[in-house]
Image (spheres, one colour):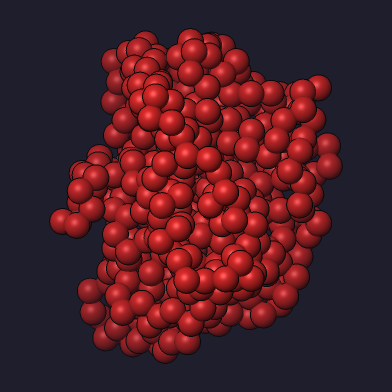
Amino acid sequence: MSQDIFYSDATELAQMIRRREISPVEVMQAHIDRIAATNPDVNAVVTLAEDALQQAAAAEKALMQGDATGPLHGVPFTVKDSIDTAGVLTQRGSPIFKGRRPDSDAVSVSRLKKAGGILLAKTNLPEFSYWIESDNLLSGRSNNPWDLTRTPGGSSGGESAAIAAGMSPLGLGTDLAISVRGPAAQTGITSMKATHGSVPMTGIWPRAPRRFWHVGPMARSVRDIALAFSQLSGPDGHDAFSSNAPVYSDGLPLVTSRPLRIGWMTGPGFGPVDPEVVAVVKAAADALKAPGVDVEQVGIPALEQDFALDVFNRIHVMEMKPAFAAATAGHGADELYKMAKTMLSLPDTSMADFIDAEQGAERLRDGFAEYFSRFDALITHVLPIPAHKHGVDQFVIDGQAVDATYLQGATVPLNVTGLPGISLPFGKSHEGMPINVQIVGKWHDEPLILHVAALLEAVSPVKGSHPSL
């Protein structure tokens, strides 16, 4: 029964609670027990919310009294430790912020609570949310529940590992270049980076560079992503980028006058990709033909003209480096881990290169706009390789030697342009590691990519698979 609880998705748990087939206290206790059993090996959870069981008891009482309930009533959720949680440690993966307890929730957290969700725990991340592996001086390294010798990714790696291992049904991560979608791919769960501004970033640090940062839901089903997004989206009156977004309703077919037209690609313009990953992307594209989708292999010339990773690097250093310098002022080198030190040591981008990169970002947006004038969505890989061993920073991918930043080749274009994307499991490597695909849509077209993701999820050869912890 316990496994039935901790591997049920949030939507099912909410339905079971509403039908009084299970109590919020039982659900919460099952997840607390799962954390106790698996977290010593995985190290995904860094702080338990002390009042989680108390809040579950209150949710149970409200249900018994017939009080109005939200769509996530009594369902536990976890939160990356860069996202503020009132009265619960939010330490940002750094000794500099050790013991920090915010007075208020981030808007994204308060919205999940308003929907009835109960904060269960905070999850691990790299120092300052800045790297593709979740490791820091304060809470150590997170491991991939599929293979403890491998990374669950970064920067939302603790969140992805917790959800994959059954410690949590639903969570919040942040995404600067890869950090919601990449960890989901490395642990075989589902996540979404919505259109930039759809979910307010209020109460989340760092904010620089603001136009690239996103906060998004992570879960084990597309319907959970859709449900969470419906509660998270919309302006808050504080984040000037936040905006209204259309909401997808699970089970309601899209009304179109023609078959959907979807392209798929793994390059050029993304960097090298492992052939196993290419095969999974092609399999996902082929699977869409059965429900009547027009699918073809495509290219986007703008991605070849301006390599998005290079554009991103030249822009974000100019804004993130000062933020790091301000946060670390007055602190010794022994309080800084390798990524903060790396960022502070990077040379400033020249003004000419900065302006050229800004223009490159505009050309990329124009290129995607032209693509989406002809196609409804795009299927790509999320990562060029499955989850890798800890501490590796040089790779040979399809015969080409690259550094670890190239793992962001297919994800960072969506941060530079603000486009929405979903990471969805659709295969495994020969070593049994998850491989996800990325579904990309035009701006504010989350309903369509959620629809496409639901189509793929229904036929995914790895649907319902979990690590054997």
